Image (cartoon, rainbow over all chains, first blue to last red):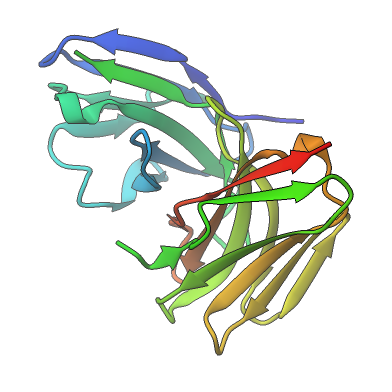
Length: 115
Length: 112
């Protein structure tokens, strides 16, 4: 079964450092997403991406965050200057279409620890 | 943000019995509802979904019921199996797009 893959599975970084989380969405999918889950809290939407541009973003997704699809397969989330409160599990997701009813599939997550 | 709420943080059920998980929402624009299952340190795995034009959807041991007037949905798992032990998230999206709003999750423990 096709799946969304994410790297790294776990990263520890110093506060203020830049971090790039990588994702390979399912190959025929057109819509890509990043969500995150802070320990003990809900899974929260960060951003959606289609046709090489952001289609929607949450208020969490401020200027410190950016996304990119550098080639035909990867989708990245960059945090420019990490803060302690950025420590969370970050999930990449993708869906085939944006028609209502189309399922969003999630990757295994990248656990980011900011120290 | 309490647009999607799962009021029971945990549920314990005997193997073979029915598990019933509940979810309430407040946003009347939500048009599509999903249930995801999540194991520790893994991503959410899609289980079953329902659109607002239906009141029931069934897939094997999983059935989702939607009561739009009450803004309530439930997931029934029958019979429950030990492998079903996980955290279950309810999620909803508006007709305009696929951004998912998640509930807080219900941890299910199925005892052998």
